[in-house]
Image (tube, rainbow, N blue to C red):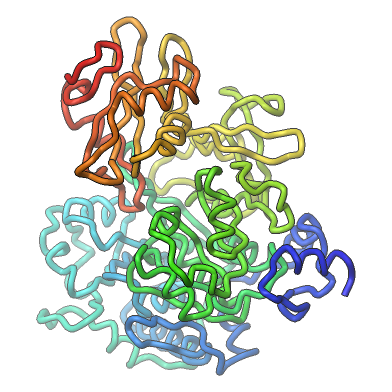
Length: 560
């Protein structure tokens, strides 16, 4: 074992051996990135499955443990082929747009995604909590010709006011048994298919795979056009960037989001097993991690907020991805859960774009998102698209060979989203002299007070540290001369005993420049959220005509 390999294993702990490394002669992160980029990507998402099934047919590919469904790579491949053949017999072809709306994480969802990928059809994932009005929008905006829908959600379909003519009953496939005899049953479609199916015209890397809708915090959701190479690329990066073997991977967020989709292919690349929870649960998460010896997962701050458990450190985790974790908690999280936690940055449009290498132990608690990963270039620019000097704040722009093609049916939005071939993320970043990137906030989540720009994210990160604060959201309040004032909405840790508003203001005054200190404080029980869990600030702002109402005014020392 060479010195570099030994030092990395020492950082990781867990009594790892060289057999736990994808490359026993582990190299630096940039060398691993060059290797990832030098190898050709699979032609499409199903080639990743096929290669794994050829090598390890009897290995468990996925385990939907709450349903008791575990399938080997051979079984998954055969089921995908049967479903593909069945869908083909119904008339779904390469280029067909197919909405998929399934309640919870069940094996039918990834099986359907892979079957559509085998055909070259285009999947439109749909949030299972959408109303009929929202379903109207997604179906019509995406030009969906077919809908695969859970029987539990049929009332949503039946309530559509703008159901297109092409989406007849004969173009509906139900997951579960429906009383409507005109609908096709997903199980029957798969059972009637041939496991030896071969597509006449297999899709290639540049063919469209998903129209993936964003959560729409500032307006109607937009459909991101994502190619096969988008999925094969970001999954390969996740599987290979650390140089570690991750045999057991956990997915608990909904399949209609991007994460479980790339986690599925990541597990296939690793020749491992994806363990899938039906729905996210912060109280049961670490129990799942321990029970299934999970090596890799996405780790949310809400898991950390639960009271410490005697078995927190008793796990097989080798790395967890954290997104936007408060930097003050980073080291304690690692110590408490005996895990290497690393930041990363990505979004639906561009997939994985940055990550913090495991080797960068000196960056723990820095708040940095890391460096660009394979297939990605990142810059920080001004409003004209010109680079700003290191240390200065600007907009993050990203480019790469497999980012989104654009927004479906929205040419103006697509035009406005790019500086040439650089995608405008809408996020404010800075880069340090070593090349590490740090997120500052959202361009549209800025508060402008007396000519000064204030990042809502920065204000929130400070108030979140105050005693008694469970969660916080900062928004602008109009002011006749200053332009805007700062208001924070606070969810107390203990609803019956919230902290005093004056104490929160004093806490902020010790940690923020005077112009950033909130003027208004309002306590609430919960926040409206987008389907992806983000605080829906547009709803908060529209909740009442006068946003000062119901808040403590720190300047006038009174409750409004």
